[in-house]
Amino acid sequence: MAVFRGKASEAGEAKVAGERSLLLGIGISAIGIGMYVPFSLVFFHHVTGLSFTLVGLVMTATGVAGLAFMPLAGSAVDRFGAQRVNLVLYGIRALGFALYPFAGSLPAFAAVALVTALADRSFSVVQQSLIGEVARGAARDRLQASTRALQNAGMGAGALLVSGVLALWGTGGFTYTAWANSLAFALAGLLVSRVRPAPAGPAAPSAGRSAAGYRMVLRDRPFLGLTAANFLTALGYAALSVLFPLYLSTWLAAPDSLTGAAFTLNTALCAGIGVLVAGRVRRSGARRTRSAALGALLFAAAFAGQIVLGTLRPGQSATLGALLVIVVVYTLGELVHSPSGGALSVSAAPEPVRGRYLATYQLSHSLATALAPSLFTALLAVDGRLPWAVLTAAALGAALALLRLERHLPAEAVHAEPPAPAAARRPATTAA
Image (cartoon, rainbow, N blue to C red):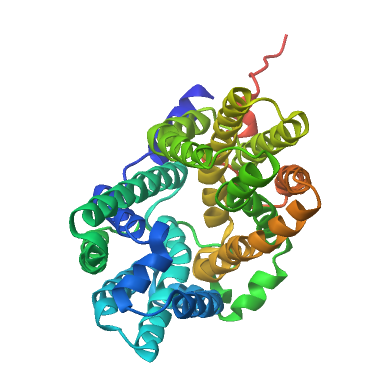
């Protein structure tokens, strides 16, 4: 058994052709994202000269349109390949940010924002599909972990970089930031073009059914269950950015500086130990369903901790210590769940229709992100602990669903490495 697992591990951990270029491109792209996402309303207001109200309306409308475009992006991946669509999206984002400083009128800004938002919203679908296209086995889990770590590090670096630019040139620096974003996306696309797809694996039973399109996805009940479990977990992912600051300021009456400390700790841990934690989980041989369920359970523990904290309401120093512990537990849940959950969705999708499958899966995340602000604020208005109770139940439900789906999902999705044959697991017996 040990020999079998060792060989499987070597095969699963094989480097992807062009992997360094892929990861470097992802890191550079994340720096570009970090240069505008934390300041999005202010960024576009100063780049275009339009009012905050108009910028906000355009961003909301284009964001909703981007969600509607995701299924089309999935179909494009299945028809043209993830790498080609990935390069097109990088090109659109590069062109969009190059044009933003010239989009001073409302129609011009709306047009540029719409095209750029379509590319932004669909990018996660295409990037997940690209990982499935260039890697197999445990290499998918490793790339998922590396990608998340680089995205956190890159976004943090981008936010620091734009802060320095603004300190030197004032709000006029936003124009230079837009062009820097354009250059970052163009360079990322150039690097990703050097990646080579993995050799095709054995044909799946459904290989000839790609024409079925989204009807095939809707008939796949185990995958829809996996998508529903992802929706429940995605609500937890939205908690740190949406619920946490409101909960601190309203229910705990804590200083706003604690929000910054929590975000900094989360980002530093994701960037610093994300690959190490994912590697430890991967080397343990845990099934992807079980490691993803463990991540959901850690989320539930962190959310339950918020309920306890909101009930006791200790002094400021005790609150700070408790919050940091809760954020560490929450971040560990994120680091355990994300690589396994991502690789599970990629590997559960039949290769000929992977783009459509992952577009459906990612829609659950986008819908949870869109629903989170209104849901959390409504629950918070009733009782500060109520949204955390709902999130605890959602995370526990996701963990239970993942465990129950395990025997219904394809074996190559559940196992990062092929399970040892039964004969290899049982000691040989000899006649007396």
